[in-house]
Amino acid sequence: MKIVERVVEKVVIRHDPECIQSLAQARELISAAADRLTQRAGEAATPVVLAQGQETGAFPTMAEVERAMILAAYQKSDRRPLEAARLLGIGKTTLYRKLREMGQEAA
Image (cartoon, rainbow, N blue to C red):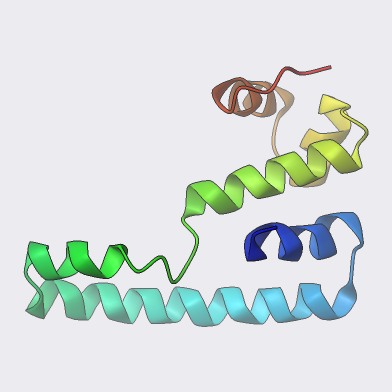
């Protein structure tokens, strides 16, 4: 199981308060670091250097995080799309579209 899926499981399925707090702090740190790195990279790095940095896979992509969150909410809601959408704070139409894009059939 990937680290993102384990974190999502603890946050969405188990509602682990320590994990939620740690995840919120990590999100803030990652966001601030990403802003600084993007600014520096834009000033100093060539496209080749930027592309090489993306190959390391140090952080999951937003698409991977989104997919893990959607699937975890869908699982937690017993495959009930309306409940999963509520858990995620998104509209049901958005959830249906994202599930379709991921090759998942809504129940």
